[in-house]
Each structure stands twice: as structure tokens, then as C-alpha cells.
Image (tube, rainbow, N blue to C red):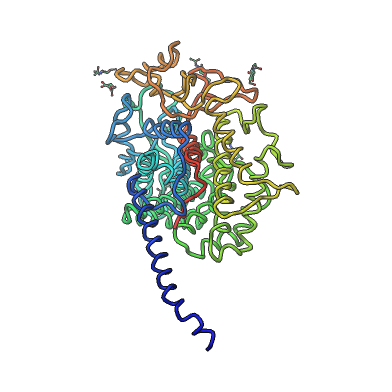
Length: 525
Ligand SMILES: *[C@@H]1O[C@H](CO)[C@@H](O)[C@H](O)[C@H]1NC(C)=O
Ligand SMILES: *[C@@H]1O[C@H](CO)[C@@H](O)[C@H](O)[C@H]1NC(C)=O
Ligand SMILES: *[C@@H]1O[C@H](CO)[C@@H](O)[C@H](O)[C@H]1NC(C)=O
Ligand SMILES: *[C@@H]1O[C@H](CO)[C@@H](O)[C@H](O)[C@H]1NC(C)=O
Ligand SMILES: *[C@@H]1O[C@H](CO)[C@@H](O)[C@H](O)[C@H]1NC(C)=O
Ligand SMILES: *[C@@H]1O[C@H](CO)[C@@H](O)[C@H](O)[C@H]1NC(C)=O
């Protein structure tokens, strides 16, 4: 009797065993599938379902998402904000373009293409990573709707391969008015970049936004997704081939969204295009000579509308956590090491912890719109901690000390909690959240009664009114406190009291990550 025959009866049991396993798997799969069907449409969450909902962050997320509706230009399909109406309907008309959609930048009525594209990239990233968590609190569709409001605009702003319209409105004229968007009558000139006057940072950021959004819409609208990807590829080619900063090409933009360089946006866009297409050339682009030229390996930086390096490092680190052959790519390792240096700077107990913070622990880099850096850092920390948890990575090392995913989580929560009221002022900087929040937000539309018939000049009296804003700029994330943690709630205090759309994208990303206890992030694939 050979070994085989010794277990003649085992084969039958083996069959039974296999059948049982298959049945269990099928049942589990069906249960999981149905569970998600009931939540919201969109791609199935991989690898795990969202955990328990944290009501505090859920409430904050729902508010934050609404600020995109406050900022919408064009013909409003659904008037979800009672005091908003159609506006900017003729934007782009002088160039035979429909630039009516998109979003106003801040408390004014400018459409600045550079930060608007950044808003779309960050919002896409949030949806790609945390769309399943948004869905359980019914925020996935609003997020996709707001994203599309911007990408529809970006598509129209890119009428041919090497032409991109990057601004609607003249800031001097626009800022000379205090009116409602619905009552604007001032001229709305356009600015463009092209082959002779290039703008690599704005073209590349727009490419990044469209590549990321192409992935968001892939499952629900393949045609739209393809359109976005075509634009993204073309814009990246334009940005890379005709290198130059829009700040040099068009000196006027220096007064508002001055760019400090385009190398970071080229790497950021190529990274998004690699995720969207899987084409090796984009990976080689970031790990080769361009990386040497622009990546500033080893040096931590602050993620914001002007500097995409920290975001690029985290996005590329993703590949070394979850990728296939990319895991052992030594070029990518340099990005991951730098991402880790960024994380080490954020963890308060780390030997390399940043000193750029308030006594209460809020990351604080600049007086103007200080919260953008705190929230952006927290969003990246939340992403990194989830990459660690999902990939089973125990620790990161900071100059010899090691830290866990939970240390990054704790940091991310500390920034969110500060913003939501756990601060010396005991006020929330997210408008509409909590008992005390800014009532004199620097926002024209919010400051003027909805039915008022104002002109550019007659509206100024509403800036000076002593009463709180008649309309709540719901979900606005204002600029934030001074380094000494005080805040002056004054309508003319634009340094502290003016919200921006990119602030909203960043806090939506952070809150979406915190809204459930799940550690799982979606695969982009
Ligand atoms: C300004 O808005 C008000 C209220 O929506 C409207 O009645 C009025 O016609 C508008 N005026 C102009 C000049 O657009
Ligand atoms: C190229 O862009 C510059 C800067 O915006 C603009 O002045 C110029 O007219 C554009 N060229 C063409 C051919 O449109
Ligand atoms: C804009 O940025 C460039 C490059 O960093 C700098 O040289 C220039 O002075 C800045 N312009 C203004 C108005 O701040
Ligand atoms: C709004 O004001 C303008 C002049 O400022 C006037 O021509 C127009 O008739 C007014 N519209 C309404 C609806 O009152
Ligand atoms: C806090 O800092 C601001 C800006 O530097 C300053 O104007 C204000 O007086 C300071 N407040 C206190 C209470 O120190
Ligand atoms: C608002 O602030 C600006 C400077 O930022 C100043 O020029 C203007 O006079 C102030 N307006 C009022 C009404 O206080």
C-alpha cells in the first residue's frame, strides 16, 4: 500500500470540505455586496467595509461639503443654498467658450485656475481614498457633483492642445466691487497660457486634476472619464514641452496666486497620470532626471496650492505599500523616504517634530490662511496612517525613534479637533459647526441680503454693517487664528476670516478619513 491509498476515504471528505468553503465564501460575498448596494452607488470598497460612524466628524463633513455649493458659478441645477442663484452665465463668451461653471475662489468672485484645479485634484484624491466612507454618510454623490462642477469648467477652459484659460475676472476690478455674484455687471476678462506664454504649473495642476477625476468617474461614466484623461494627457504634454511659469508669462498673476515653480506640479501630474494609466513612462518621468531636478529628496515641505511635493511623495509612497513590481522600485523608495520625513515632522513626540505650531499644537506656518497647512498636513498624515494599517506596516522610524500608525492618526485628529472647537478661543473655524463660529466671514455673497439689488459700488455698505452676515457661508473653513491663538471676527479681516475652496477640499479629505473607524482605503484600480 502506497501513501496515496492510505487515505482512500479522505478524498470524499476533501470534496465535502471544498464545497463547504465555496458555499461560505459565496454567502459572505453576497452579504458584503448587498450591504454596499444599500449604501450608495460607486465602486465597491476594497479591502474592507467602513466601520462605525463618528457622528462628530460626520456632521462636520456634511457641512464642509456644502461650501462647494456656496461657491458654484453658472446656472445652478439644484439650489441647495437658499441665498445663492445663477451667476457668471456669460463667463468666457468673448472667446466663444462656456466658462460659466467652476467655483469662485474665496470671498470674491474670481475664478483662479491654479488653485481651482488644485481643489479638484484634492477632492478627487479624497473620493478615491475615502469614497466608501463618504458614501455611508451620504456624501459621495455631493462630492462627485462638486468635483464635476469644476472638471466641466476645466474641460471648456482647454479648447486646444496648447491653450489653457487660467483666469476669469480681473482681480483689481473684482476687488473694487462689493456685490453678490448674482448681481455682477463688471467686465470679466480672461487670461490664457499658450506656447509663447506658457504656464507649466497651472497646466500640470489641471492635468493632475483631470487624471485624478478620470479615475473617480471611471466606474459611473466611462465616456466622461475618457474625455478627462484625454485632456489630462494633452495638458501634461503642453506643460512639459513648453516649460515656463505662468508667473513669468503673465506678471499680473503674481499678486494673487504667485507660483514658486513648476517642477513640483510636473511630478505631481505625472504621478497622477501613472495611477490613471499605468503607463511606465510616467513612472520613469518621476524617478529619473526630473526627480533629480525637482523632487528635493529628503527635505520635508508643506503641502499647499503652490507646493505639491509632499502630496506627490505620499501618493507615490502608496505604490510602495500596495503596488506590484513598484514595491521594489528604488526610485520610488526615495519618494517614500521623503514622505516619511514629512510624517516625522508632524508627530509631536518625534525628534524631528516641527516647531512651526501654536502652543495648542496647531500647525502654523503663515499668518494668511494658516489653517490650510494644518489641515493639509493632517490629511496627508491620515492617508499615511491608513496606508500603514492596511499594508500591515508596524512602524516608521524618525531619527532612531519609531512611531506607529496610531501616532499619525492622533496627530490628524488633533488638527481636526482644533479646527472644530478644541482650542483656546473655544470656537469652531468651520462655519456653521458648533455653538460658536465666525459670524463676520469675509465673503461678499454671505454679507449681502439675498434679495438685495446691489451694484458694484452700492454693496460696500454691507462690508461695514455691524450686524453678523445675513447669510451663513455654511461649511466655510476660514483662514484661522494668529500664532497666539486669537481670532478677530471682523468682516474686513480677510487674512483670518476669508474662506477658500481649496481649504474645503483639504478639510473634506481629512474629515472623510476620520468619519468612520475603518482603516481601509480603496484601491484606485
Ligand atoms: C440683483 O439681484 C436681485 C435679487 O436677486 C435682483 O432682483 C436684481 O434684478 C439683480 N440686479 C441686477 C442688476 O442684476
Ligand atoms: C498667448 O498668451 C498670451 C498671454 O496670455 C496672450 O497675450 C497672447 O495673445 C496669446 N497668444 C495667442 C496667439 O492667443
Ligand atoms: C513671485 O514668485 C517669484 C518666484 O518665487 C518671486 O521671484 C517673485 O518676487 C514673486 N512675486 C511677488 C509679487 O511676490
Ligand atoms: C436694481 O437696481 C438697478 C439700478 O441700480 C435698477 O436699474 C433695477 O431696476 C433694479 N432692479 C430691481 C428688480 O429692483
Ligand atoms: C495676538 O497676535 C496678534 C498678531 O500678531 C496681535 O495683533 C494681538 O495683539 C495678539 N493678541 C494677544 C492677546 O496677544
Ligand atoms: C478694509 O481693509 C482694507 C485693507 O485690507 C482697508 O484698505 C479698508 O479701508 C478697510 N475697509 C473698512 C471698511 O474698514
